[in-house]
Image: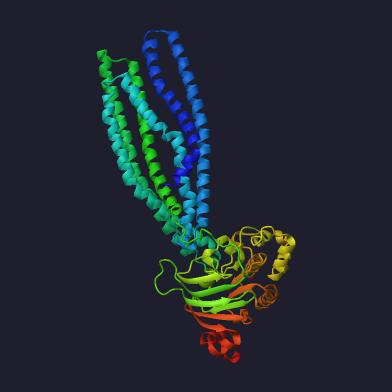
Length: 575
């Protein structure tokens, strides 16, 4: 919970002002039953109209002061809680951005979404409640106890029995309820996960008519979440009526014993009315305190989930004195590199790989699905750190380079194309924020995207739907390539980024890349041999091992795995 200290430090002043307003409001509420008792016992019983009007005016004035304080408190508490939630959500988002892939892999994407939204909202609501009713409840309770005791000490003995019983209910409530609300939040994670999967794969669901299966899957998860919520609420529901029953029994005792004392002449009617009012206020405050602890249990569960993210230490080691000056540009070197994903069992994904890619060279990387191609290139921009061995860029260990500086040298077109909601020009300018239209068009032409983009009525201002839903796979890949090319990097990594492009368009892209990549280091991952056949060097991977390295002609003579891939694509007649 240490992460909360920052927000407490920033917002404690307006918080205290809101609590001060709330204290004034509670004080005004506490004064009124006593004034009412005096109006009845002195004004009504003595038939003193002047006294009644005087005390009635005082009650109205106190009510006005209380109402003004309440309005001020509401305004301040709303501003503070909204800023509190906004800042926490922003800081949590920044924290997630700063984490390595290894850190993020510990959470499901849906769980992080829940923590950014629902969990932050739970904590925000608790903070808002603290300034609205959560502080007022104990103030009213303690104040009513004091005022009731001053009014009649003998009758106050009833409170000695009632209050400890209610306190016991609340304590049990907190201890029993917490685990149930943790389960509720985890169940909500699973609901978000299923929804996320469905929305990202909606086309596949429609293509295979799997609506029934998806409905059943969602219904099951949704029911689990509902059951977890119902169970938590059932547990909480036991305590609230218990509190109400205990306090109401206390009110019955006040009326019964008060009636006896009025008959004896040892107590006035106004005092009984005031005492009942104080008992009602105590009932209200204790109910609020019970609700406070229920809300606290949920907020605590959510705060701990948020704290899990804030407490994560980045697994990526960043040099305290990173190198920013380089003698070479575009050289990439692997020295006996091994890599395994965290908490993964079995053999390493990458096993003792060594090679050098000189500036201006084009390296092709090919192999069967699951051979480690994408994992290999993800190590260069430090999406993951090597388990052993060294990767150098421009003769410097990448661990000694600031990650921002390193990634500024590299442009990556990932295997899974990602486009963002916005216009085509905005997506391409992700590679170079200050690029002008001419530069955008030049990059699009290199990626063979200019023709289809200009065919749209709005050209480069055409809006892209979420995830590029209104673009074909090939169109998305070409926009993604343009985004990388406009960056003009020292190292260009193309991770099977033309798999959805037709052969003719791929050939055009290859031809333009040959001209573009002069002096540029280019690593091309591909499934098709035609994509890498002209590379300066081709690396053949099999189960994480380099089983062949050289030009196409050499590999056709010496590498059996490469020969098998060639035969599968062109047939034995092509050999």
